[in-house]
Image (tube, rainbow, N blue to C red; front, side, top):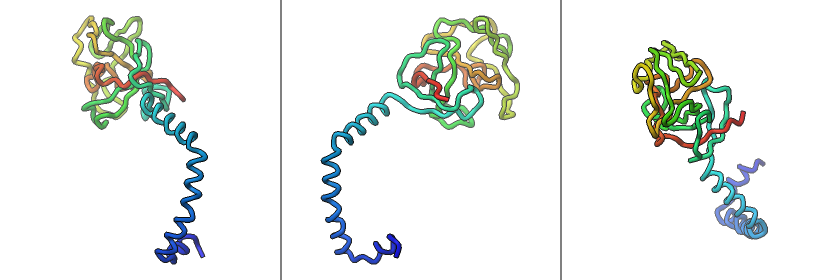
Length: 185
């Protein structure tokens, strides 16, 4: 007789009696391991309050899994995690991870579809990996631009990365930043 059919054949009173027999065992287990359970719960709450995991589903960066340290400041050159808003086909709140190449006071030079940051030229593509037309970032005018406070110019490492070169993403606002991202693998 299987365990499920055995439980189904029990009467209500037999089921309650088995439960009563189990309760002292459970109570003893909780008493003897209370400190361990409290530590496990406290560690979970501490980690959950300060960290998140993010999975990269695109080839924009050479990593697949990131540990995000919430509210941690990110310097230029570091990886930043931020939430998306109104970026089709991604849902609002989708987490992007990109590299900051220019922040407040940094200079970005726009040359038609291309952008120059420091000694790095970022070539803008006309058609993206999704085969949809990509439009250059219209927040920045042709020529030299200074990034305003509270804004970030971000890019991926892949040439077809959806990033600040394009109007679809544009400059990342500081209010959308979740924290610093650390690649795991």
